[in-house]
Structure formats: C-alpha cells, structure tokens
Image (cartoon, rainbow, N blue to C red; front, top):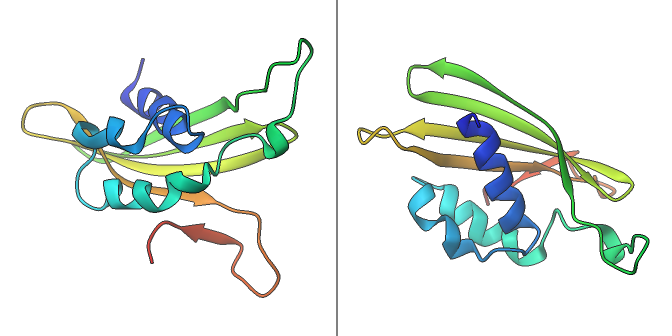
Length: 126
C-alpha cells in the first residue's frame, strides 16, 4: 500500500474516534500532532447522527479516493475523499520521509461545510 493511502486510513481512524490521537505520536512531525489534537475531539469524519445500516450497526466512513503527488524527494502532498453517510468530505495532508526512511504526517487539513459568514474551508491551524 502506498504511504499516502496508509496514512489516509490512519487519519480516518483518528478523525472518526476509532483510535485516540496519541496513536499517531510516532507517525507525525511538526504541527501535525497539534492539528490532530484540535481536530479529533469533534470526530469530524464520523457519520452524522451515527446513521444505522441494515442490521442495526453504525456506518463507518469510507475512504473513496486517495491520491498523492510528490513535491520533491521525500515529500508527498495527498488528498482523500471520504464518504460519510450521504456526504463526501475532503482531507488533505503532507507526508515527509525522515532520515530513517519512515514516512510521517507533517500537516492535516479538512474541508468543512461552510457556515454562514465563514470561508468554505477550514484547517486545524488557529
């Protein structure tokens, strides 16, 4: 599995509340962990209203598309489309490869539903 797809699944697990933020400690660098600390408490990618599927189980958001583009050696910018019930959400993130050859997430941003009077997209940055 390409690193951007692996990280998209990892981020999805944290941003749906399936995994705690500290699960990403060794997989982040720079501001990414702080961004996750601000984003994760709201479980922004969980299915609205915990929609039930047949059989009474809640639906889990599904990664529908994930693409990564190298910016330069050791740096990949990626995006993912996440199906959350009847909505599709966008997630963008940056991966950086360390000297140990391991990929780590360096930044995370989510597309949000605009509220009146606000910009159409929001990031975890204050």
